[in-house]
Amino acid sequence: MSAFLSVQDLEKRFGTQRAVDGVSLDIRQGEFFALLGASGSGKTTLLRMLAGFEAPSSGRVLLDGQDITALAPNRRPVNLMFQSYALFPHMTVAKNIAYGLEMERLARGEIAARVDEMLAKVQLAHLAGRKPDQLSGGQRQRVALARALVKRPKLLLLDEPLGALDKKLRSEMQLELKRIQHEFGITFIVVTHDQEEALVMADRIAILKDGSLLQCGTPREVYEQPLNRFAAEFIGVMNFIPLIRNGDSLTTMTGAPISTVAPVPNDVQLVAAVRPERLEIGPLRLDTSASESARPDNRLTGTITALAYHGLDLQLHIATDAAPIIARLTADQAESRDLGPGKTVTLSWKAADTKLFPA
Image (tube, rainbow, N blue to C red; front, side, top):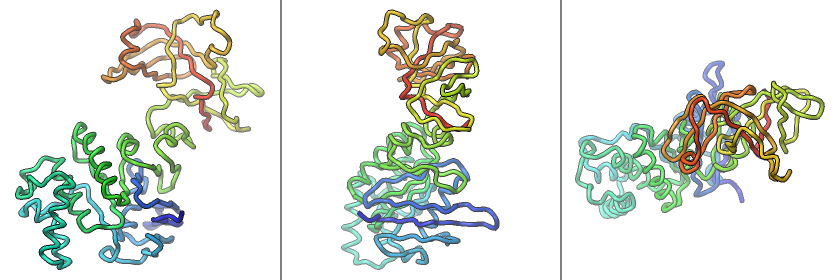
């Protein structure tokens, strides 16, 4: 199936600096797509080129088979929702939503019907007569979303849409945005630097760094199978253990063997990477009575230096001779253990959970 939105070798230069460096992406119709990256990664510049507010230095943008690269913003079937929401303070909720339709000079009856439909969709019908300063942050966000959707764009672009909200409300609005997008079936592209936000909301995620596309995949793919060290470090928490190659085997700097099922590249210094939740916390002595198949593939010994309580889980910061390690236990697991700073523990994990990256 052909892509609904096709970004082809898109590049944007500001003088000698490449803000976007040859990015190519195919996005499906009805997809919730996230552009994820740190400040300066090029994600907002890419979004502005899709909206038509920045002209590409080279490359093309095709939407539903039409080349829109040179189209002015007001001629594209695209809407951009800004982080600031930019609501008119002197207008009611209903008037804010209706404003774009009034500028298009639609019939009064059609405007009223579409505004009522949008108010119902975003669950704000009871607040239609209020002004923005009488609304909560989440309600203002939904008004801005309704104003963008009421024009029925083929594509909705969202620039850090939840950045102004507190953590609890942001978590609620992540699910609300996903619900609204699913209900309308419109393609959403959201720019965010928040990895949790991207993992929760998006069907697929593109990770950007220094204007280049590093990886694109489903949330599970980019989390479980990062293609490079930056992606592994940027998404979630990852432990990195420096390795030494001894013939065909890999060991830590202190000689502890490290097993992996990943192919081992030649002639490059490596680090092993393992997620905190993949680590098992065990007693200092290994159970020699366990069958060989039940024994861990990898094992390190370390001393707990600090505990970080996160409600649902407990993070253990552990000093080992190989590297500082973070392990994660659920609250239930932690309650049954005698864990605290100064305690010596073993860390074990499976070979399949060991990723390899150039150092």
